[in-house]
Amino acid sequence: MPSSTDSPVATARLGTVRRIGDAAGHNAFTDLVRHRGRWVCAYREGAGHLSIDGAIRVIASADGRDWSPVARLERAATDLRDPRFVTRPDGRLQLLAAAVTGHPDGPGTGQEQTAFRTLTWLSADGQRWGEPTPVGERDIWVWQAAWHGGAMYGIGYATREPRFVRLYRSGDGLDLQPVVDTLFLGGYPNESGLVFGPDGTATCLLRRDREAATAQLGRARPPYRHWAWTDLGVRVGGPALLGLPDGRLVAGVRLLDGGPRTAVCAVDPHRGVLTELVALPSGGDCGYPGLGWHDGVLRVSYYSSHEERTCVYLAEVTLDG
Figure 1 (cartoon, rainbow, N blue to C red):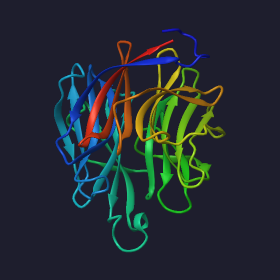
Figure 2: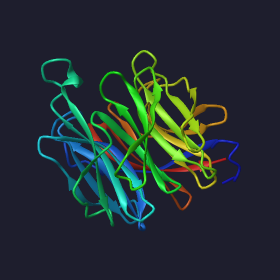
Figure 3: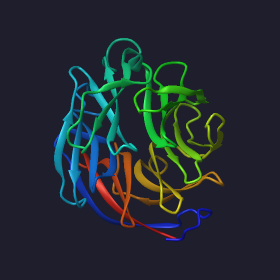
Figure 4: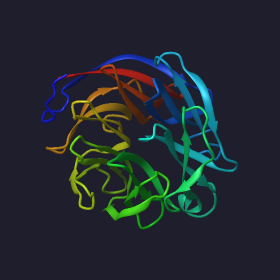
């Protein structure tokens, strides 16, 4: 693969796709990480997309082919949603997820009847997890986090009015303090992907909804207090960002134009362009990928409903150019 970071990835080829999670009625909202020589995937198990019985299933594989369940994280009367891995500098693995209480179908105004709290778990091996610890602020969902320069940075979004995203910083990954109170405002900003480049530049791929629903690409240099944003002109869901070894960026997203699908995209941060490279076998209720790079191959965990019910898949993708 070329070493230049000025030219984005040009093409991608889809390889093997495997179904790796289908035990529950609804298996969705994935993340993927390479930890201590094996793959670890986390996703939500529940009766439905918004059911109150959501739990986090963790599975592991040495080769990406044969997977075994290693943990199930659950909480009484709570919907645990959207697990996100954070690789820590101390070698441990951290997991973020939202704990949602209340029921969105209850009386009143839907989501306003629910309460959100971000929880985190720590594990030395990805299999045995400690007790959950609340992090951040109530009703601000810390969606994604990453370590850089001895600190963890996380981006959370407000689940109540006014809608905004906030940047947090923590020296231990647990005590999250606001760095930028209002990182972005307008068009209901929410889910995000976050990576740090070799030169310390932070890049955020941000989903928006409502009237102004096009995604935003934000970039900042240390100390990450001032961000420049570019409108990408396309709607995305469940964005995930990954920096390749050569410094270039790829994203995994749900795209809607032409029908819902999960796609791998090239990100050109200099021009502010998101380009679809390959669509994964998917449809209907789908998306929320996790991205991992190993031995020159991109692995993508995601979920989809194109085979009768909602299941989790792992795709192998080769990047060219």
